[in-house]
Amino acid sequence: MASIAITPVGQGDFGTVVTGIELRDLDDKSFGQIKAAFLRFGFLVFPGQYLTDAENIAFGERWGELEFGGAPMANQEKSEDGSYGDIFPLQTQRMRTNVGNEAWHTDSTYKPISSKCAMLSAVTVPEEGGETELADMRAGYAALDAATKERIANLSAYHSTQYSQANDLGDFPPQTEGTIYHGEAYLRPLVKTHPETGVKNLFVGRHAFGIPGLTRYESRALLKSLVEFVVADNARVYTHRWQAGDTLFWDNRALLHRARPYDYGEARVLTGTRVAGDPATELAHYPSDPVAQAGREALAAELEILRTEAAGKMFGSPSATKGSNVARL
Image (cartoon, rainbow, N blue to C red; front, side, top):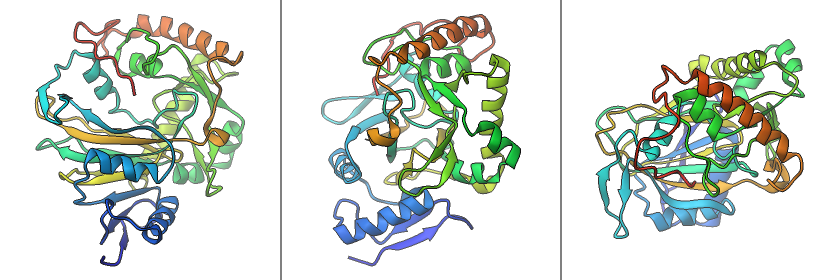
């Protein structure tokens, strides 16, 4: 095997391209090099890997227990034989969820245990658009002024996909147990200390709302300003322009990400694998915990307000018109 080449994508410790390696045939020494690069740079690009679903799962399992593995992140239904069928209409809930992912977010903060890391592998990409962007919340936090750091040091926000879909798109999916639209909202600190590096970073994104102790206006303004601050500096943002066969792997504990728009009539097929977080550091609470009721009440109250504000949003209605396909990831 050729020696691994680890090439930073920019000037700082944000992102690197890894070549000279086959992820499907990875020894322990090489994995150690990759893990060290991951913790330093936050995300890794592996060009031309062409991983199968099983190979996605196998690589993901080297990082820990999976939330899911080898799942289609696509605008087409995947058949049992592995082929992809018709493109979903934009008004289906599947596509509404896909479009929602075009806003900055971190995976699984809307679950009891938020995600450790995630990967995408490109199968089919559109001619234009459809990129994946990443943003460095470590550098964003470091660049904050002292007064802002002091202000947010002990603040937390609730996280919910029902909130983010309603707020960003005027989309109100039906509340359904076992899906990502489950009626719970999980309270997480705005400032996170990375459990492996000890580095502090912001922990915000589209799913965050309702900071306890602040008015709704103050909470919305603060959360919006923090995300905007992170992505305001081009040095803190990376745009991955997909080529078929690429694999992108990132740290959900420290980075934001989003998809970019494209012609939704074209196929965009990625294979996704997500690694679950360590309960010791990523657990908010379980639905059975008495503190969970406060999150449910905060979410219900916020959704009531958002229903009056939905007009003019992309969908601007309380639910998908047909073909629900409610997301279960």
